Amino acid sequence: MTELIVVGDHLVKRKRPCSTVHELRLAANRPILREALRSIRPLTDSPQETRLRLLLIAGGLPEPVVGYTVTTEAGFVATPDLAYVDARVAVEYLGSDHWTNPQVFAEDIQRREGLQDAGWRVVEAIAADLSHRNRALVARVARAIAAGTIGG
Image 1 (cartoon, rainbow, N blue to C red):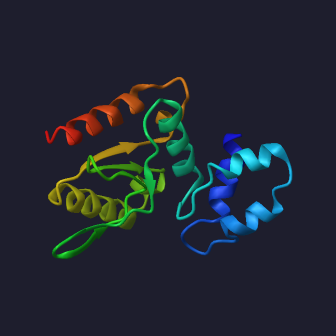
Image 2 (image 1 turned 90 degrees about the vertical axis):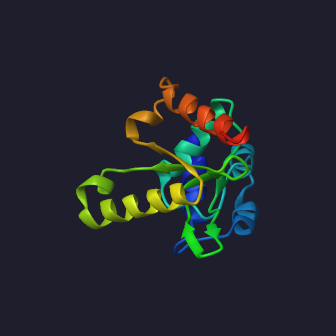
């Protein structure tokens, strides 16, 4: 099921989508595809972001928002991978290019600092965090949500 959702999110991704959710609905005539379709979200940027979102949900957290744009009075701040808007928590997936590509690394620092300056908590995840046996990431995100919800 997870892989079907990953593929679906990729098809309706933010940059150069291959399809729309409506077009996928028309093509989905098998029960497993219809079930996966309910969890596909447009505006994703990578399969790992989808896996991260599904892990957080499977861990008992509310579904984060995909493609939320953080702004302040000064304008655009960032579009985090996943957002818990009410708690002002951004969850960012950092693939290997985030530390091997100097430009991406610098952009990550600027985005993280911009989000923090705007009053958001940033939780970063790497590939090792995506194991279904690894509950530490879910716990980190839950703590950030709780702190943001109570205004801490």
